[in-house]
Image 1 (cartoon, rainbow, N blue to C red):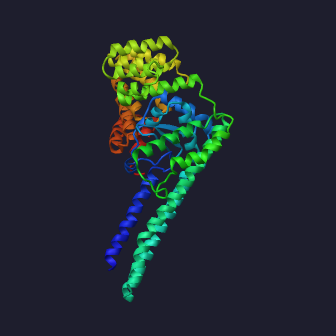
Image 2: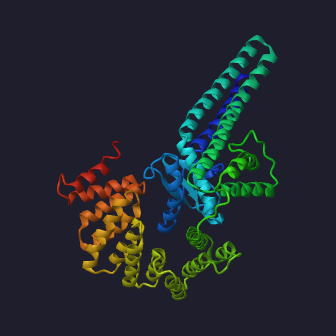
Image 3: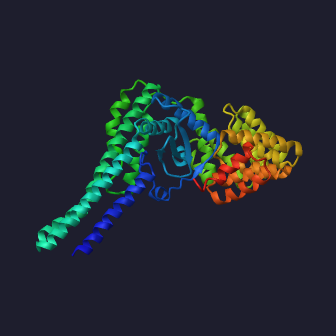
Length: 466
């Protein structure tokens, strides 16, 4: 009698543990429950874009400051996912491109970021780990008590005691999970309230938050799904609206709208995301209410470029540059189009112009400038390219792509030891440690022993021992 129940108990505990691991891997402090498959794989598809990163960072900065957090310590990361969601992990806020595309106003995204900032300021992800550990302990103890009851029942030949043991064994993990989910729902409501506070203190409306929860509610209603409110990690959308609406409307800024300049940047972002994720059809769908919106025209230019009509795309982006000659990201797209047309020298000029106009001096734009200079094949350009790539890497040390370009540039100059070292860094930051160590070992043979570069290679070689 003991063996079958022990197996059942193990399955219950294993199921709870798997759910707990998913919860922990996804940080589980998010606007909505994080996609389970993504959490289990621990793989988050990251998107890099200078324009979008600058805008989202500008959205987040005021609320991060209002929460008493350091802006430099918090990084907003773009996730390539069509769903409307965001979550936090460590000191990073992850936001899906789907959320950026679906939100029609900046205020909606600012509300999302304020919610995630509430999680960070409240230390919710760290507290969740403590709750998770407690829940797992509770489940395991309950399971052991159940097994003990079954053994006692078998020894005394009292079936009732054995049946009670079965209830303990199965019910322990269930109770633990319900307690954990209840805790998570409480933290989600706390993050919502914190977001309202941050928005009010920065003179911004919380109307976008209500719009977001209305969207979730409508989506849930369309599915026709019946949800047990005690078996979910987040409050139901209608419950969140009911708890927040009075607070949101009490703010003197409730009816405040986004500035035209910010809305324009938001529309440009949406046009770009629509083009890259869904092509021209997505651009048309996203701006069906306003087909002449600058975001729609920007998206159309990008979609045209992606479809292979480079000459037409060049004319379209040229018209946008004429309309707004100080927009660095129009020149960045122009550079990409010219690269596709194999007009490398002209592309380099476009990226150089983008960099000169960019107030943030984005490492990504500078990296593209260095890359195009390298591709010209000119020895003088190669030296400038290396300087630009190294400056870019200094600001984006973990971005492996830059090291790959640097390795190519050094290789063209014939500086093979430095090329091997850059390749080692590229492999290292790509997670390919064994390949990184091979390149690092090769690099050391041509580097002065004890030099900073030699030590850098040695650090990579020693990674395995660490």
